[in-house]
Image (cartoon, rainbow, N blue to C red; front, side, top):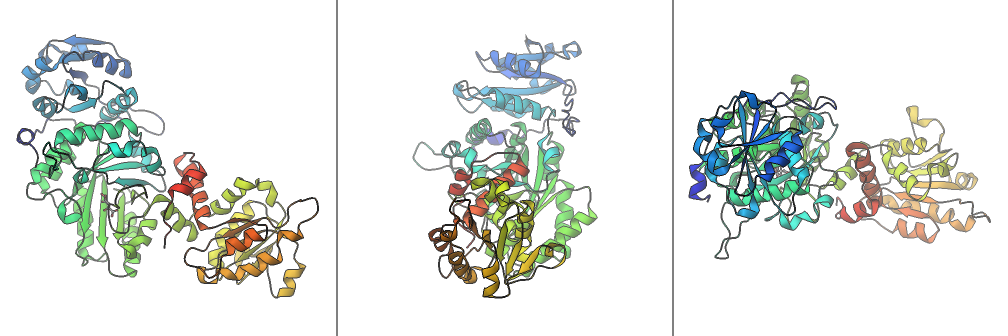
Amino acid sequence: MATKQQQQSAPTPARPKSTNGVINGTKAGEGDSRIVVIIYGQGQEKIVSVFASVLGKPYRLASGFSAVGAEDHGTVIGVAAADAEVDIATRNKALVVAINSHCVNLGMPPDVRLSAASDYEFLYTEQPFFRRDLARFIAFTLGQISHHEALITKPRTYFISTTFPDVRTALSNLDILSVGSDAVEIRVDLLKEPLPDGTFSSVPSLSYVGEQVMLLRQRTELPIIFTTRCTRENGRFPMDNPELYYEYLYRAIQWGCEYIDVELWLPEDIRRRLFEQRGSSRIISAFHDFSGTFKWPSPQAQSIFEESRKYGDIVKMITIINSMSENYELEYFRSQIKLNNPDGPPLSAVNMGQLGQLSRALNTFFSPITHPLLPIVAAPGQMSAAEINGALSTMGQLPKKNIYAVGSFHFAPSAYKDRAAIILSNSGENAASVIFALRSLNIGKIYTVGFKALGPLASGVEPFTSIESVQRVDQPFAIISALPPEKSHLVQPLLRHFSNGKEGQNGAGLGKVFVDLSNGPKKGDPIKVAEQSGWTAYGVADTSAFTTVETLRLLVGQNVPYSFVRLASGRGLY
Ligand SMILES: O=C1C[C@@](O)(C(=O)O)C[C@@H](O)[C@@H]1O
């Protein structure tokens, strides 16, 4: 349970409904134009000068809020904590924005009355001091930057649900964990605060949570999603006192968390207050159904969306399903929501469990993801970014990337130019992205086994009709198998037939690249056969890692080492 001291502080300081400064394209907004007053702890006046320097303004120290007037516009004001106590409650909220700064090295928690009465609170460490963190905090809370505006324009976004009992254990791996993510979720309900008697607090105190959020923010540039998941929705936060949620979630706004997860079951009054007081933070209205009775094509689903959007910048709906077809029902729901609400809010909706994994790949906004390095998955059926990207590429949703990435690893794209390739597949659809990718590498003739290319993909593509036709083919440079796992061994005779034994004297490179896209238990080992026959062979784990690298490069603008992605992708889909 939260401490008594914390429960006394359930403030609702006024703040502008929303600040007007958002990043518009690349242009930073003006943001909150009120006078910035920094409350500082004993011996910490230097933090005022750092705030001022980050904001590019002069500063002065004042004896209290009553000593700040309109003439101070353009100057950052510092007020000592002891002085702030006297008149913070009666400050002119239209004139000043009060930021309680507290150095955690001086002990936690900060003065809880100041925490409660301030507009925002900046927790920091003296050593090491992260100016980057301060810059981001102040730019965000004052509305000079907005991650959200940029995020909603991306075609796909993900957030990693961290499930650590103490984020300290995650810090050294945080970069690895957050590759491919657009935001990091801190599951506050899963934090475990150790108590002096060796047990753990049933609810981590605000003091512990504040420090955890600070540590996380110091180490990541990604926006933070602050989540207090309740016991009924697969979390650990107790449901008997809704005000406790208000207390924690409001504090998260004060700490400058970019996203606040507010569960839909909470009383409307609490949801409304949080929405009105959210400042620059964005509210994710969250609904989870574990009953197994929820249906996407129902008036209930519609009304949940309508109720969620009342106090949500993002609507999240997560359910348990009983059949595969409910994934299609969700896709229909998603398309209708988009059609009927072109101006948002964005919908993040997935089905849980293994049956629901398709929907995790198809969801485009804020797909929750996990990572093999996390202690537990945050919800049944959660997948990693590598798994989702693997699934998408298998479905042809990430065309081009597999083969191009392979080409750029051991061979320059020019190596493929005008050479022959063979594709094995049991359907044209499965092979479409392969043909597309090979074309983008200027491959010469493409021979197909097991399918006939139709439509625009068919030109320059010729089927193998018999074993004799194999004999007539030039040495292929690439063989790509998109066969299902149980048939993947059928490629082996071809690999042997075009083995490197036939390579020309000068080593000009004949049969070179073999890619097996099948994922699942196989008869035989085509990769081994390929390698024994002199091919450079790639399996699905390689191609999905390449795909992830390329996807990250293209979508997130981050370069991630292939070897690292390959190591980190861990489990396969099956
Ligand atoms: O709401 C969600 C989605 C989730 O429940 C999932 O199904 O992946 C995981 C939670 O951590 C997150 O807050």
